[in-house]
Image (tube, rainbow, N blue to C red; front, top):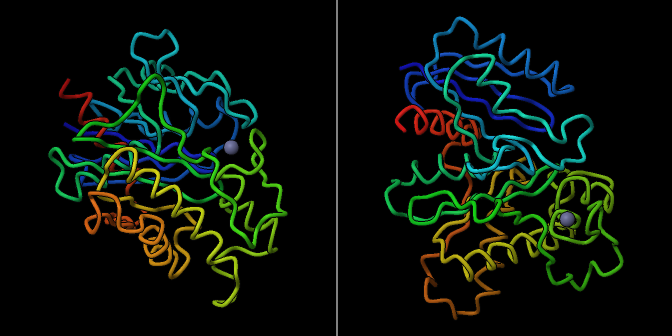
Length: 286
Ligand code: ZN
């Protein structure tokens, strides 16, 4: 069966079709405009390609409760026009196929979990870019809870060299996203992390905040790996700094200990779209 996948992000939608999550036959990227324009453009690209199921890994927050009438909606995003948008319903109606739907980061976590061997393993995926989000696969299953995790909005302990910056999260100020996502880095230092000189204190400060999130994930969920993706995570040396700082924060206590790892995505930049195709495969087989 031909599968369709959408990695629905706040700045672009990645569209793909393939005979399996590993066999992408065509891919297309469109910018994220208003929902009517963007969803129509996406549906038009899939039309005539003969897909039997569609998977969507979507920016959020989203509704994932299958008992809710609003399942498949983006709910409360500040992104203009996208709040209360029925993304899954629109695509299901436009294409006449079953739709699998999850957060963008849960989709990426599913893909990375499968790339790591799948099965009953556990893994977290953190994206650090224009925002920070986290997806979780525990013992083989994506975690939704009563909604879905929002790892980017925890409050880290402030770094001693970063006590004056108020943070840029519109909801929380100095949550993890407000301190360590791309816009927070730009607001403090006027450049992206990868453009700061190697000896700039920003590298240690951002690594400390991300490491606190990794430590939290190791300590609360007992995942073995935290995969860090997204634009900021591409900064050379960041994953290594985060891993080292997370080990310091652990201080030799956690029982998972030496098996905890902070790594870059095995699938490179493809975790999200491969995850969307996995969601399609899951709903096709359901
Ligand atoms: Zn926040």
